[in-house]
Image (cartoon, rainbow, N blue to C red; front, side, top):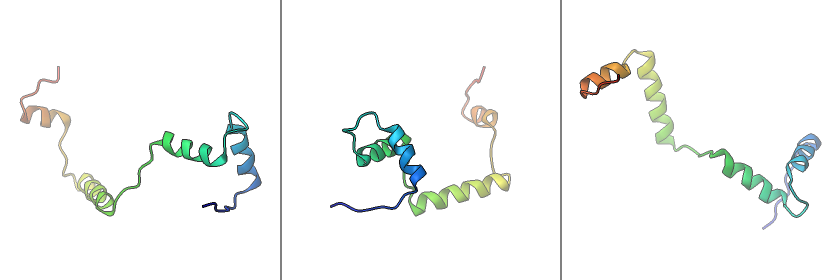
Length: 77
């Protein structure tokens, strides 16, 4: 299936500059860029857990690396 998308002329020029060969399609180029970024879509649960973690930090419910190491008997030196 092919779909037409709208992009600005400046974006098209930038994409053209990134093509290493005239044989490379824009679809391949865009997919390669997506793959290289390692970007992952977060689930709602993951987003909620991140928010909870940030709230813990704001509320001071955190431990230093030294405290964690001491708890587990790890020497950091």
